[in-house]
Length: 380
Image 1: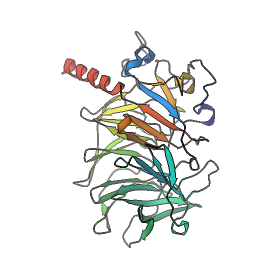
Image 2 (image 1 turned 90 degrees about the vertical axis):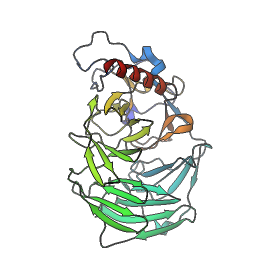
Image 3 (image 1 turned 180 degrees about the vertical axis):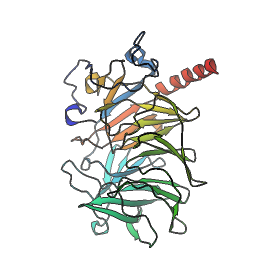
């Protein structure tokens, strides 16, 4: 989940803690915001009961080609991850589509006529009522504007075209609320900031107003009906999109914000928190960040390896005692509610054979909730 030489090692060959003096120390809310004041610092490893647990599991079936820059959607009702396209470790463009079943731990290929699909990377997708809606991508030095729908039960692909539709792009945002699909941003030689709505019922596109600067490979998730978007910015990195008014809003935040220029990260909503996982940045390792939606505050959520499948040597510990996992970007990340865990599959750097990574929040989240409730009572 970082550069090849810092990727998680399944056999944990090095049992010793690695202390890095060269890691930038993001996220100091637990110790105060003054980086120079180290008085009274206490390692997170002395408070491991409040830590999320990071673990790795092998897949229980033959897995598809490891990849990054692929599309993926998680369907909670069926506990399935649907993913496809992307790039393999040799930068070969892929065109296969797969399903991963959480309960069985097995993959199955969705058999669709390859003549109806074309290889690409950077395509994004959404899901509704058994149908995948996919747009854009990149292949052989060409940006793609192909908007197509895949009926997963009938294995049928429908390509839609219109005189009024978004231009070709890759790395754009795509999200769905009700019958409206939002497409925003991306790149096609230029940083794009145009925003579009596709209505499933009318099958028509409509461009909407957006005065924000263009972004590529942002992360997003819903909290209620609000879509939160993060990253790929120099400042004002968190955005909220209101589907009812079709407006973008910059969210002013406090606390310990992740580096705003992170791209290819993943944003996951759990209760009233948004969790930011991984992403491409100048650092090879990353902290687990959380955003309190109600109080608009970022903080570092402590994390530790489980000590069985992974240990401290599979990441690094910064000088503030915070464990940092190797960064992964352009991956499939979602919240698996039955296990109260964030799941991470595939992504860059590509690991072969692939593995499933879990961030178990079942014990840590209730404790963090209680601590923050007490803190708010004292402050307000």
